[in-house]
Image (tube, rainbow, N blue to C red; front, side, top):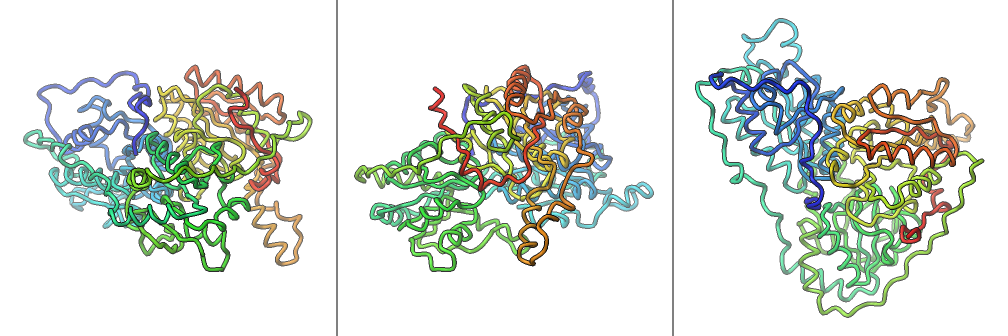
Length: 606
């Protein structure tokens, strides 16, 4: 993935005061110095860590050997945040950061975030430490407790590759290999574990750092010309082609080529809120508002398609089933993906096995670029009609706030701003906001757990720092409460960010599950809230944010106050502050209700 050149991902956070003293010229060289040199050669801008004795040697090297620059340390208060911040950063930049996890216990803390990155196909360089592996060098009690025979076994089922090198040369090679593998599609996290004794071994001389340019990831494979021609022929004959725009890059050129392909074919396009923005949702060919599942309109469009072009669509088999039920899929299906290279027998994140009449093992951008010249002589089709949307409802300041009302107030408050929505809650509907560029929305977390939102938002905002874009995350209260201490890193590193918490004081998604079970069993639906509510007492979210060093507002419970508060919050973000706004929303809203509350196109406000 490539980011727009105007986004300067090198814009750093502040450096800790005082600035570390420089190493004396006659100082000794240690094993961990060579590891630190390798990280610098790989141009890793940041390492995220919660301090741990197992990597105290590497910690010292980053500070006293490299001076805490290139890479720079960012301290986190929980290992899960180290990985989730790196995850969020990579969703913008496409490049991995290093997250250092202490021994076996830190790896266990960070494992959920590693799974998220794995399921989201996002590169993260996870570094760990163990030992000393040599039992004779272990301190009593603690070194034994934090040493594992095969530490990577804790996460091996959801990483691309791992290593535990036993020498400096092997450590250099392991980092080079890990970097290459993480950044080769399908991308994902890798894990390299360093023996504590290796880090603290004194070397006779400073090792030569390998030439990183000779170990770069390979260029993406081009699709077979015969498959491109067959795909072009199917699309050329199609009367009702549909493009499923799935896992694609954040590049503007890729975005423009997808639009050009859809227009050349007159193909209707569907997108998915689990993934980042892939096609302009205000475009006449965008067939239906995106969601976590197909809406009835989207299902109808897909069911009527004679040819379906899947650009690495997430869960293609499940999506076709949503449209066709148990009936045989009558559309001809073209699948474009390399995701099968990451499928294994432990995790079922690969979803169902979809039918494919043509299967191209390449990244979507490569296929789209190859298709455009093949279809150059395709006659201009009649433009498909966009699904009509209901005009946005007027907000009643006397009624309780809902998620659509929050979306409308946020649209009005950010009018004229170039906004990046870093995260959206499950209760968000695709008709609440249009995406007009690849950085307008970054997608969900991949793994579907709770607590990743704050860390990923911080990481994405770090990558956007200096870009001129306004970073905005909208998250639920459950997500906020599990990950709130990630915001301390934003405050410490001076990362501007607006987080809006849609606070229904409940794990409401599970209320819906309990309601469904109660209905099936003929039991009282009224009891669905028991064991779900986050109330009595209601946590003070704004105070929790202030405790992390952020500016905070709320709770806000009416639309007039919300607009004024968001205006103040945006001004604070522009001053470089991290801001949280606690918005009390009405329990009972689900994304399906969004069909009655739709947004106007941004063009309507111009």
